[in-house]
Length: 391
Image (cartoon, rainbow, N blue to C red):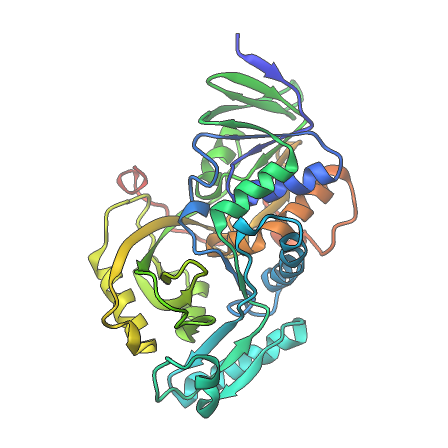
């Protein structure tokens, strides 16, 4: 007979989204257990760059969520230890030509109406912000609200601060349901965790957890690579990327897309992302993806052309076809909640997701309208990966 424990809520997933849900649920007075088949930040969170971005989001529900998270991350930075490496470095989006700059200008106008600070930077002033940036660019926009954290540390510190009971290395094998169909906990190979609420914060594997509960949530993996250079002086001051990155984020294409996002880190290495492709859970190395990233980064910052790359890593973004996460209660299964499908924005959106979940769990007034993130909404068409791709 498995061991039995009875918290108020069980959260499946010890990445940064699950950690934020645990943190804010505990702050709301709930007792929390977190279960994960791997270690803390063992999935998408551990393979992320730590982006906290508003610059890449058009006006709408996701941007509203990002702006709330921006404020919450700033508050958290005053309480979490320095290992979290919160750095409000700001972002710089650059345009290679006048048509791209015109498109950025229109994009920024919509963002400003939603509360984003976006300042146009003419071509002859780009070097004031980034002295090593390539010449010949048409201009850009500075986003001072963009920031950075060390994602694995952020998850670990939020979990520690939550006081949640952690059950790591335990795969959830069943969502337990009562006679009426309502959730009553989860089962792992070691124990039953009995609770009236279960939160699916399993990231890329959120669709699998939903299936255990008998519902459909079309979360798909979207693979991405990151290059890590040798330690360098701080030659890149902001998070810098070209305008086509915004289009890549919004695209639903399954094909390989790449647009360099270049940033320095407190430790010295420069991080270079980001690629996107839907190949199921294929973990093989894509030399084409790495080649593209290196070339694009060197075009943005020619000083990087001769810098040594120490390693590359990759992860899987939890992608939903309409590019919005699923956050909140699932009316198809009473007691089941979702907090997944954030794609590449989960680290940035984690605190706001946690606050919305805590409000739903306790019946409190949410800080923004949760309706656009309803798990049961029509998510739009999605390509279904083959069994071979899923393995």
